[in-house]
Length: 414
Image (cartoon, rainbow, N blue to C red; front, top):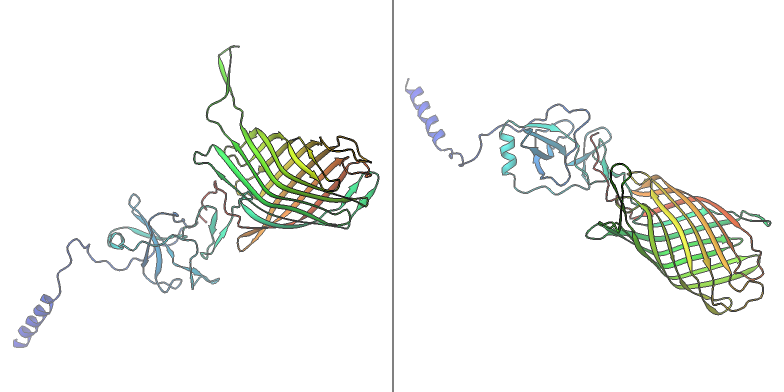
């Protein structure tokens, strides 16, 4: 009897030495265990408050390290491993890439863990235009081919009317392009640097431009409003979507039938008018016209070259995998000196069409198949037959720094 009384006293003293719970702390609950996974897995939201926490370990994630996002409305918390998974589905030592930092304040998460919130397996968040596979590895699925550094190569056979075909030609092209909208998003600015096409082999040529800048716009107020009164009155709005196009320091050198011609274009200024453009101004059909100041290096005199162009540029799908361009250009050369073997005011005509398809990506940098058709007629090269020449070129193009399009969607559940 005495032994039982002493034991009771000791137990009561031991319990009294425990510190009281901190004010405001929710009742303790065991570490949450994840519910069975859904199919497909839900995807966490990029940019939403995320906690890094230790949940109940499992065979797949023995460390118990998870990224957690909670929703007060559904009383549900989504949890994704903080590490990528191996091929067999078990946790690796590689942390997830392209995720937002975890918040350092865990007090709110402790309340979720102590409450009646359900913790469910999920796929970690990814930025718009990026996708995360079932192992947590991230990859880009959306590309902006108007913002990139590119390097390409192609086979470029040439056919000149009445002169047969030239197959031993290859093309190398490279350049840098970017575009950005104005603060009001009603005007698009484009800058192209070092746009270069180098054709090697027979009938070789170089076409390189140091700088090109152009804009197109979407005015909010129509310039002309026409109201018709046949039947119900209807209003028709017409806008003049004007822009500018500027080119600085272009070099064109070509060899035809044993004759070499070299032209320097110091500056070209065109006004542009969009016949159609997409809402985000990235795709368009437009006309542009204006003069150039050109130096004929082969004959040593300056000329004035007015020109007009009809051109189009289309991104055909939401993810930027299909890109189509076309153009038709006419130029007239004035103020030149008389040169034997060519007319006093020669002309140039050019047409082109191109299609680019992204095939795959290396380290999230796309590799594209390029198909390009070009034709030109000109009589500004002395003693060279004035005939149409055509080239159908096919090759590959590798793009560096090709970020997702500004309209890129977030990845869906998988």
